[in-house]
Length: 272
Length: 314
Image (cartoon, rainbow over all chains, first blue to last red; front, side, top):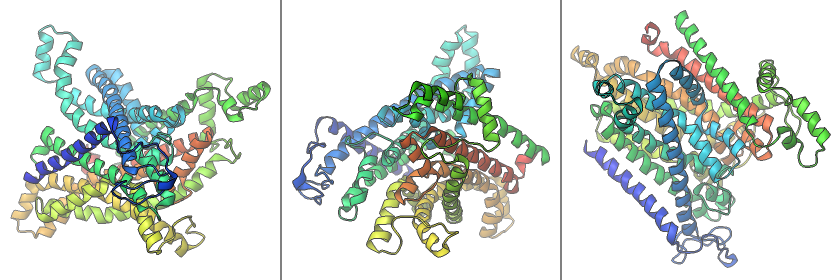
């Protein structure tokens, strides 16, 4: 049992570092992340530039801090979108049952038949490759998973006695849904949202790496990696640090997600 | 058994229909007139009107869909607006390149990860388990495009053992072609092994708690017989489904790997088409990958009874 809480601790610390760095990046960075300096091009990490400079002499550490902000922001909005829309669809579907449920779930399952990143790519072709295009594309791509999980939870909850009791007491359907069913769905929603936050950060960096994400010069970890790629032989740090930021963030979210699932998902409890 | 197969095939039909409608509708959502977009800024109103008739845009949406799906069913995916190439042969040839990498990678990853996951479950909470689960979690947290870059930097640029840029088909040059495939496959294997180790471990753990395992042990069977003959057989089902999902996801998400290693696969074709606003090609890629995802999952489901006969009875 002990090492699983240790997992949660490591994950929590990594995610806390990410959030802190992103928050500090809002008000302060060591250098102006956009300032070009042709005298300091491709400078190795030093006391002046902790993580070196890029091909335009911009400070890598400052750009990574702004990149963290972009990742957190896009991750939160994407997950927020998928969680709200998915929960709404899942609750309606699970609560209404019958043909409404049948139709919603048929569409939902067909959307799940697209690999998430592929659906996002298709949607990006529609919305255009920019920050808000990514949020919508990923948000829509993740919504079906959320809807399915919430519907499953609602289906089992609506047969329970306390829901029956709420109806007998004369509460309206909407009140029963919001007051009694929704709070009981929060555990699976939280577990899935945590994983989704990781998927969103990974997908955003992958799309930015492909050139379909946040356009340069605004820094994101993905587009920094893509821009640094031609120079990695002479400037290893350009290929190293942005990737390390993504990997450590994902590791933190994965560990935290595992710990949350162990804590919130009763089925997993007996296993550990 | 035949009922199970028919049932599963019938279940795939609505999915295929909705997937096609989605792909069809997606391209129609693009703001602006597709005909004007395709012809560019220099087009005259007459040319645009002609293009609209040619594309069938003057018909109603359901009519357009019927024409489009009729064409698709006869193998006519249309032509690229950038170079007028026929789309289906283009998509299929690029798909073969991607599929070769993805299939080899998934097979290798399964061969490594499944036994590792089973052993981790068997030795639950031991140092071996901790090391395996820890490694798996780290591996799945490393984005493939970064891992690919690091491997390229190390094996390609620093050691000079493997080619860095370009691609040679194995049908043209077996040894040369394989050399180009080593790094992309290695990248995918490392990443996907992380996912599969955890899945195999979790499903084995679930089975190891059951009474029949205790019974098998009580009969005096050796641990390896208990593990591989009794536990593994029942635990493999969820992992098998996961392998199918990974295969499909990789086909969709391989664009980043193809970008890192400059491989002319389907993912790269799709991304390039997005840059060039070549909508018919984007549509063709989307439809092809989504349908192959449906087919892969169908095959996985149809083979499932080989590992777990209970699903047929249900």
